[in-house]
Length: 226
Ligand code: SAH
Ligand code: DHB
Ligand code: MG
Image 1: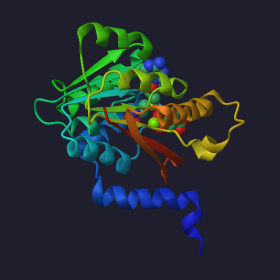
Image 2 (image 1 turned 90 degrees about the vertical axis):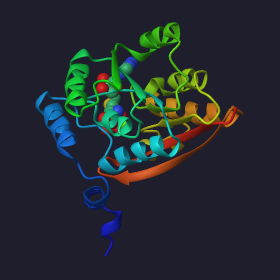
Image 3 (image 1 turned 120 degrees about the horizontal axis):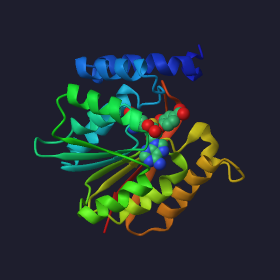
């Protein structure tokens, strides 16, 4: 009678939720197939999480979205589907091979004119965005190399407007977020993120723990106040 606490059950529930509320269409099926065939790691957001990203974009009426960590473009497609016809999404990916797979997936989804994939380590491509005067961004999804999440967050905060929303993935990390003595740089970075946010009057935030097909993790949602 304790099925609910087993992680296998979390995936079944994700499948149930996804099947009814976040079903895959041809473009999403094809994106995952192409990503798998190209050997990309299967670490994209789950279907219910992808749908959440789309809903958040729609709820705030986002017109400009920034994403850190494209992988095969799965989350990118969900996010871009939350944009109006004149919306734009810039997504940053360090791996050229992944970016090429993503570009094809994005084009197959009919989003070629909406999404721009920028290749290179984000800390190197951000200055170029700055130089071009791109932004402010209405919604940002931070999902790249986890040790740099605090740096990305700080950059985004400086390129936001009143009402901008920032979402960071993979912050709970099997609950290690609460481990003050963790020596893992990824965990330490998520703790630093929380401490930064806590001390910054420009943002109001919360973190929601999640279970599902991707195990036990969670995301931070931060709203820019000023
Ligand atoms: N957002 C994707 C998953 C991203 S996985 C989805 O849910 O569908 C994390 C990605 O970040 C990987 O593709 C990895 O290559 C990329 N990455 C790692 N370090 C990076 C960096 N310094 N700059 C930009 N992207 C990086
Ligand atoms: C992993 C999961 C993610 O959501 C991500 O963005 C990067 C890595 C993982 O499970 O390793
Ligand atoms: Mg992630």
